Structure formats: C-alpha cells, structure tokens
Image (cartoon, rainbow, N blue to C red; front, side):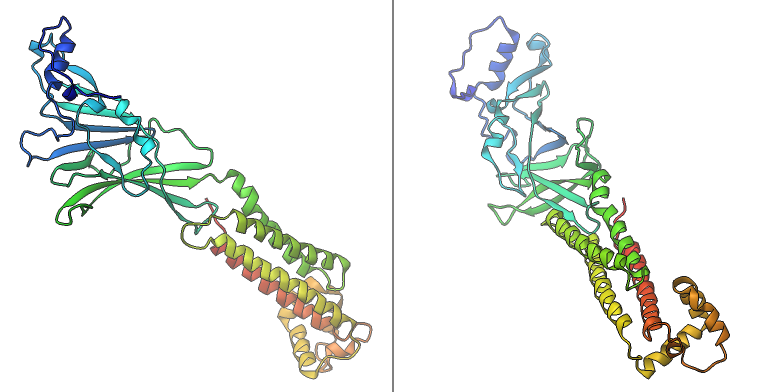
Length: 392
C-alpha cells in the first residue's frame, strides 16, 4: 500500500542525513492532490516532450523550493511520483487502459531547488491510424495521439510542447520497424470545450506520426504481377485466333487475374479512405482479360464460317486494308503474306475480302478486329500504368 508524506506523522527530529531533512522539510504537510500554486488563479504550465518509448513532463511546483545552503548544498532530489502533485495528462483520442498507467506512479520525479519538476516515464500507447490507401501498397498512415489534462481546465493547466513549436519530435531513441518507415513527427495544439464545464476550455496536444510502408517485398508481391498480366493479355491478342497457344494463354491469363484480384482483396487494408488505384488496375485488367478470352472464341468461330460476311463489313474491311495505314500498321505486322496482293490489286475495285478463295472469307475481318482490339488494349494499359500503378 502506497503512503504519502501527507498521511504520515511529521518528524521534527534532526537527522544526520541532509537529504532526509530536505525531504521532510518539503513533503511534511504536502498534499499531492492540490495543484502546487501560491494563488489558485495562477496557471501551471506543463511542458510535454514525447520521445519514442518515453514521455517527459516538466512543470514548476512552488511548494518544492529550498535554499541549498541550509541543506548541505543539495541542488537536486528524487521523489516518487505518488508523493507529489503530477499533472493528470492522459490520451483523449483512444480508450484509456488503466493498467497502462498503474506503473507510472512508481517512477521518480527530479526536483530542482527552484521548484522545477521533471518526470520521465516509459510509455506504450495504442491509437487508431488514418490510412490514405490511394497508392497502396505504398500507402501512408497518419497515426495521432492526443494528450490533455483529464480534469483541469485551460485556466489551470497550460499544456505546451517542450519547444512550443510545431516541429519534429525527438527521434534519437526511435527503433526502426521492419514494415513501416517513420517519415516525420509533427505537433499541433487546439482548444476544446472542457468535458465537465462547457464554459471553459482545455488545451490538447496532438502528436502526428507519419508512416510509410516499406516497398521491397511488396513490389514483388503486388506490383510486378501487373506487368506479367499485361504482357500475357497483349500476347494472347498478338497470336492467331485459331492457334492453340492463344487459347491456352487466354484461359491461363483469365485464371491468373482471378487469383491476383482475390489476393489483393484479402491483403488490402479494411480501413482508411480512398480506393487503392492498384485495385482499379487489377479490375480493369481483369475486364480486358475476360474480353480477350471472349474475343478469341468469337474470332475462332468466325474463321470457321464459309459464308461471306455482310456487304457493309466486307466493304469497310477492304477500305481499311487498302489504306496506307492498313498496309503499314496492319498488313506488315500481322499478315505480311497479303502485302503483295494489295499492291497488285491497288487499282482494282473488287472486294478484297471476297477475292481470295484460298482463305476464309472472314480471315481479313478477324485480322482487322484483332489489330483494333490489340491497339485499344495497349492504349488502355498505357493509361492505367500512368494513372494507377503505384510508385515509391
């Protein structure tokens, strides 16, 4: 059971120990429940200094002053926190765990001869972090802890940062985390209505920890697959529709998209704001993979047809194939075998699609549709890479 000097009988007998004499001189009749000011209207300024793993409070106690000349030139003494008044500074933005504070009062305070008290105590706090998931998995989190007096108003306790500036806190004790990088810490202060008296206010200090996730293993797990899926989708479009390899790649590509989206949905954070752009990339890529699979089946069926295509399709296809763009970008890349025939029949008004009996009447239609699909998918991927792919 903890017993303070206020509850003990004061002993006025001189002791050989100067420190004991000083302690009895200061703490005899001292009441740790009374705010240590000469005038109740005076404000106690408490300076809060947060260091990873430690909290440091500094304030002046007018009841703890002495003349060193009367006590063997003692300039400093250590007093258990439970024997003197200490500010009731607690967290305000999370639930308080009483067991977390039970050991605080066992630590000792440094008391200087002019009444300045310094209390350095180990601390472990848990708080809620607000995550911006826009560029997940390279997301940034703002984890804030808010301190303030639990019972005193702003007229009684003025809580300030130790430098009285909104600058970075002390990081010399910080130990690096394997998952997150601590980018910076900054401090803000605000006035709020007091919880017990709406006519008064209290000062709150908020320490903001800006964290950024490590990128190493995450790039391999979530970013690199986007490039692989993109290459598989474009490769499936590049191959001949009737080829066995295209059908295998298209189906395998579709299954890989399903597995990747499932993994991303499980791993992405369930809290925070903004939908990850990486998820938008995966969903868009999945839609294109499904389109390629369906298109491959349709084109394979068209190449099996023996009936000629409708006149408007035949005419439009012929016009595009005879154009300079069709010769350079379409024929030279996808079907070089017909380049010579187009040059020979350049002035012929006959229907190119219908004129070659050795090929399926739908062969050039499928070539044209495949090229247009390839160009559209390639352009879509370029836009997605530029707008949705996260970078460090």
